[in-house]
Length: 143
Ligand SMILES: Cc1cc2nc3c(=O)[nH]c(=O)nc-3n(C[C@H](O)[C@H](O)[C@H](O)COP(=O)(O)O)c2cc1C
Image (cartoon, rainbow, N blue to C red):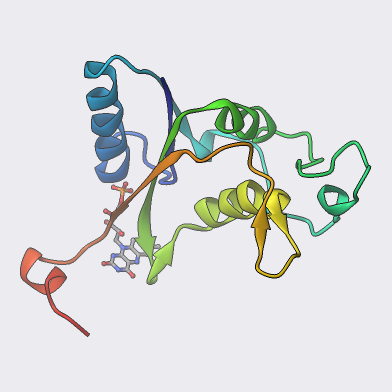
């Protein structure tokens, strides 16, 4: 079992990275191999809407054609058994880098069918870890 961790925070030793690393530590205890990637170490951009991944019969169908720092990570995720994505909350949502990562991860697999389908080769377990700046009491509030 191989588990990939993604740290979507610019800080490599603070809240998000710590929690993602702890999740991976737990996986190791259960016998998994793990790898942690810090998105801010990678030179990449979000989806450029080139649609190469949507050209049926093309060599990039279902795959992101961009060859940059994120490409090897996307390949490792395609072969992984589980994925843990962590991001701080910035202005109410995930960080820009996490958003760009999700665009690149998700769009190539999306099929424009009714209902939408996926070209991802298998189902894998995926966990999301969000960190933010609220006191515990406030985090229980229902809005
Ligand atoms: C640009 C920026 C925007 C933030 N926006 C929010 C927010 O909307 N809500 C919140 O509760 N915390 C917000 N925070 C606080 C972070 O989410 C919080 O400190 C987080 O745990 C930091 O994660 P890290 O230690 O992994 O970098 C923001 C922090 C920054 C730097």
